[in-house]
Length: 261
Image 1 (spheres, helix red, strand yellow):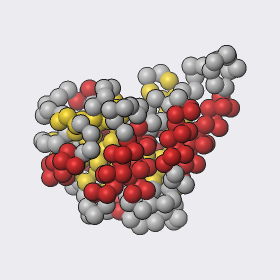
Image 2 (tube, one colour):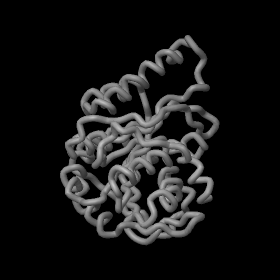
Image 3 (cartoon, helix red, strand yellow):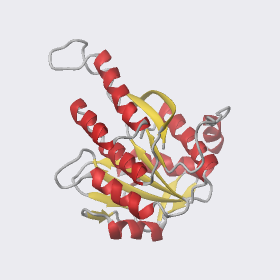
Image 4 (cartoon, one colour):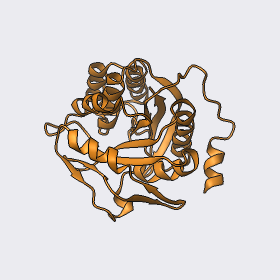
């Protein structure tokens, strides 16, 4: 597995335009080869530009209440990755909405994909780092505001040396809609919506991003909103596109991009 992970970043050169001190990334949360490659190259970039000590992994999931793993370890095929218990406790203490603690020993298969593949790749690419896995509701709800949470996390954590936030997010399915069908989006419309969403990640504007996500009907936009609000609060005013492509999950194909801020 270690050699396979290293192969994902072989010949990858970090773009010179990416500055030191980036604090946030948005990646596809999938286990397909293309998704793993995007995540691996993002982690490699993060190591060279930020020297992370702890990765805060934010992924969406079912339910209307956020959840955090606060103690113990995450098991991977390369060994256990420790939870950063101090940082997890701090995040839980200032979280502005309700948050549940994920119990130790919960079935790993029930965790979001980013919480499974992220620690595994980090074992090779970010050796020695700790993890804080957070699961949030998939779409903004009255009970949960990802923008408010992202801003509060930025205010509280921007002074935490070595803290790096990674959020999962994909765009639209590519193979489940008939072109020009009544009530569905055409491929051209989907690509246009993807581009509009990416624009407000690369030139971070949280209100415009929230509006585009709402108009598009994207069901998993919460993590992207939280991460963008976090980056803006940390005074990151420009995003950088590492790569983009199409990833696969449950037989569906989705547009995806790896963005760092």
